[in-house]
Length: 228
Image 1 (tube, one colour):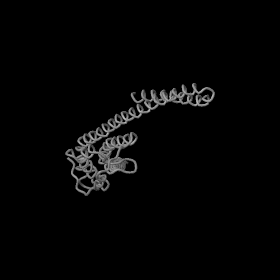
Image 2: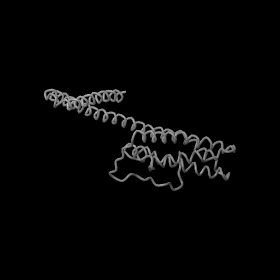
Image 3: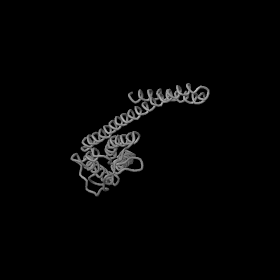
Image 4: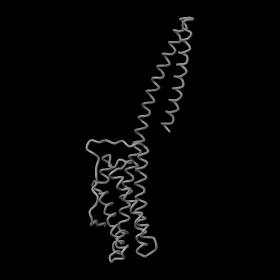
């Protein structure tokens, strides 16, 4: 059980009514950041244990891992210039809902900092705090796994929605291309009936027909790619 005894940075949220729609690339960044927390949380604990055993450099490595962990968490919750923070109800529930994801993570950060302070000064109580870190590592990892799964689910939903939207756009383009081809064919017929006066127009109509055929080919290729 983690116990936080120091004030934590307040969690900021997007303004009411704000709807952010991350791109696929942003979802990838979010998943990477969330995965980074899982990895670094274990490093924090591992090197804190080694620091308690007075192994050279272990405390610095644990502190560096905690800094990376904390930075990733702040970015995921509050956002930065790259990621938007808690932009949807699913994430707000994961962090601020009954499971208390944000609270659990911040308690871990606070506990680790206190352990580091005592390890640095070799003060009494360091062993007890490190023991708490060890006890809390597995429950924390479960929370981090659940949150990462939320990001992964959101990314899958986004990809499916984007594919559906792309398919709709491609269908519209295909319909327009078919209509343009019909218009081009009718123009060629009319130009042929016009005799010599319509020859130049017939050439233009022929080029239009060729262009629409290329559009059809591109649409078919894109449709296959979107279905892959």
